[in-house]
Image (cartoon, rainbow, N blue to C red; front, side):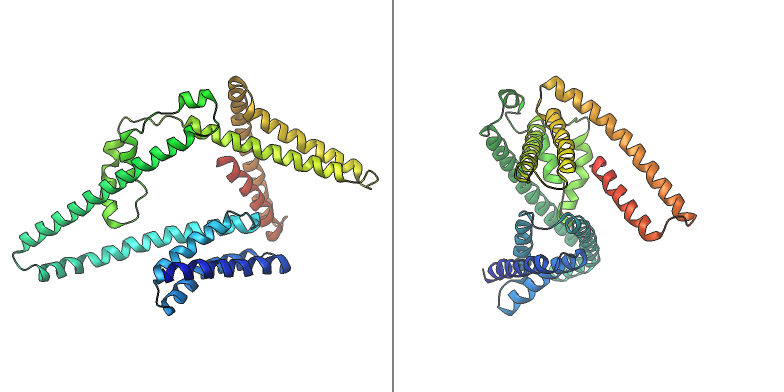
Length: 330
């Protein structure tokens, strides 16, 4: 309990101080990333000093950081590199864990032989049975948790304000094959890794149907966000003084943005045929944007190679193009 409390408390304190400093001095992505990296270590050390569990403190600190992140206080210039950084850290940490577990396997087998005297064959068979039993128990636990979690998800969706069509298209039960795949996917340990070998057999001939309820949820969120954006622009235009020196420029810019958001709403909130047609147009536009972005980037690199463009300017422009391309591919 001391570990969890210290992790949550220290994380809230440090994030509050970090946000206050960012408001006064401005945000710097490198400093923000460094602080987010040091917070779990600080939680671990403080919990150990207080006699609590450092592991639980670090986990509680990470969960608290994720909850604070949902407030949306961080700017995009900080959030994008920070998310990329933590993706790399997570990938590297998982790889290191598997390497360390593999290095310890030989020592574990030798210690088991010493603790369980007898022939080598008997010890190997007993060790194999233990591994099979643990793997089976873990698979059963993951299967049960997957079934319960999906049932709860369907229950929540049925009680939301969805259209009758969405409720009719929503699956009424949980496919056992899907739960079996979920039980073996996204593993985080050497024991769970053994179950992944069964994925090709489970997935043979299986076609995942599109999740209509999730698509409806996404469309509803996009439309709601677009309407909020339009309301904010309209409020700004209404509150702006009529004698503002750049009134004409503000009006023209607001009109273009409002037209953009109305198009977004029409793509997501119209009839089924209109939404399908808008989706086809959007796919074509995405294809054309990707061609155009890659042509822009090729030109920038060519200008950089012949020294007609400075490296600093090239990095800035290429980063903008990379972000736009990543958005198209997401």
